[in-house]
Amino acid sequence: MHKLSWNCIAFDDLTPNQLYDILQLRTEVFVVEQKCLYQDMDDQDRHAVHVLGILDDQLLCYSRLLVPGSQYPEPAMGRVITALSVRRQGYGKILLEESLSYCQNLWPDIGVRISAQQHLESFYQAFDFIKVSKPYLEDGIPHIEMLRSK
Figure 1 (cartoon, rainbow, N blue to C red):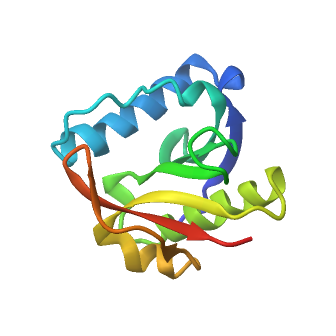
Figure 2 (tube, one colour):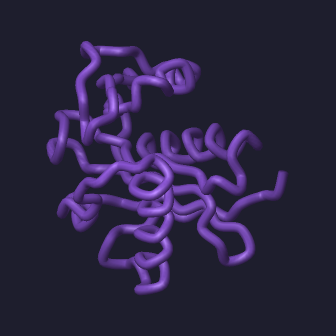
C-alpha cells in the first residue's frame, strides 16, 4: 500500500483543480458506479471542509465534513469514498481515521453523525459508530443514521 498525502481544506480554499477532482470522483462513484441519479451538489459543500487523500496527484479518497448544526447537531461526515482502483486495500479505513481525526481537531468533545449506506453498517461499527435510526431510503439506496460519541 502506498502512503497518501492528506489535506483538510475549506471550500473557499479549494483550487479549481481540486474541486474538479472531487466532483469527478463523487460522480464516478455515486452516480455512475452506483447508478443513482441525484443532485450531488447540494449547497452543503460551501459550508464544509473537504478531506482529500492524494497519491501521485490523483485524488483516491475523499470525505466531506459538515459543521455542527448544518445537518445534525453534531458534525456530519458524508460523501465518504475511495476510488474503485484502490478499494479493498485498506484506504477506506485510513480515510475514516483521517476524517475522524480532523473532526476531533475541528470540533473537540463532540460526537460525529453519519447517514451511512446500510450495507456498510459493520464497516462503520468498527469505528465505534452505532446505529441510531431505522433504515430509510436516501436517493433510492437504503441508509441508516449512525452516531459516534465523543
